Amino acid sequence: MLSDSDLRDLLRTHDLRATQSRLAVLRILHGQPSPSSHPDVTEALASNGWDRSTLYRNLTDMAAAGILRRVDLGDRVWRYELANASTQHSGNDHPHFLCTACGDVSCLEKVDVTIGGSVPAAVNLGHVAIQLRGLCDACTEA
Amino acid sequence: MLSDSDLRDLLRTHDLRATQSRLAVLRILHGQPSPSSHPDVTEALASNGWDRSTLYRNLTDMAAAGILRRVDLGDRVWRYELANASTQHSGNDHPHFLCTACGDVSCLEKVDVTIGGSVPAAVNLGHVAIQLRGLCDACTEA
DNA sequence: GTTCCAGTTGCAACAATGATGCATTTGCAA
DNA sequence: TTGCAAATGCATCATTGTTGCAACTGGAAC
Ligand SMILES: [Mn+2]
Ligand SMILES: [Mn+2]
Ligand SMILES: [Zn+2]
Ligand SMILES: [Zn+2]
Image (cartoon, rainbow over all chains, first blue to last red; front, side):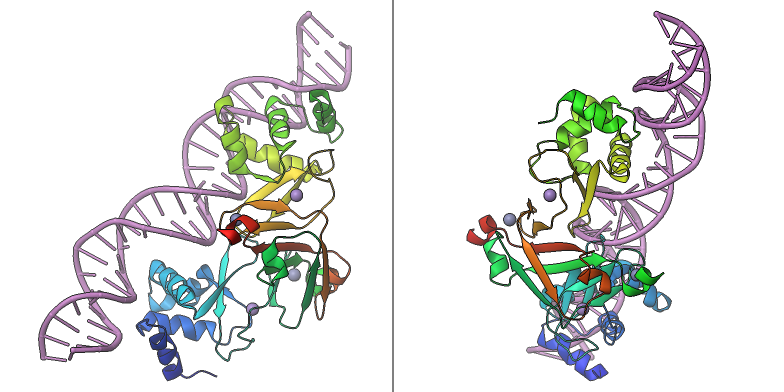
């Protein structure tokens, strides 16, 4: 659990000013079980009056600084999650699963993917982002 | 190698009319080593004067009919490839690799991906689309 | 070969997400 | 407390995807 002062320190140690909107964005992302998109964050903070371009730059700037991880699940939407902090999911990089029916995202933190065959060298070094898409259990049953 | 008459038959057997623009789209896709996007196809056929919404519907309709396969590589762009015809790549479904630096797409037709751990049931049944993203060999060297 | 109509096209909009230039405001170090 | 680089608010644009509707056409039926 990260306190308000923790979040402030997180920003300062990454050379970013601890502005009100950045703190609000971090509070939203902290504790989310799966990554949130820019539209998600904009809607969540709609009542606060932040401009969507401010929130957009908050997300991209914090991702560029390494505070957030930007993930692309293959549905034309960037999503962001805390990269290292103690949050509801591990700070380590991990694959994600996107349900093609309901859009739900799950973090596959304990999944092991092995890739064999003729692939770019970077893949064999583990420098690869893996995305899985299909039907989630709920949508399979339905 | 598919002849013009082959392409015409391909459309007719799928209950689609063999229109000039559909034939032009199939000619473009046939022989491509990797899937093409709607903007790709629009640009390739720019001199022919086809409207982009016509080409858009050509692609989506032929994908819905099963002539094309629509793939999503995680960069907010739909791409299309021939689904079954004898083309430069196998008609079978296969994972794709997207270079995050140069945008190049490669078809991983001989790659074996094993997934273990706690995943949705559909994944263990092989009902899953797998996308790999990272640096291609050319961009790794550069 | 001609006719006819459902299927298809061209055009004009619109939606969603992402991105940026610039004047004004603010965080924070001095 | 002040000064200024960093950040914001607002306007505006880009890209990709999507749809309504009137006009046109492929091809089956004759
Ligand atoms: Mn995650
Ligand atoms: Mn392919
Ligand atoms: Zn689902
Ligand atoms: Zn590359």
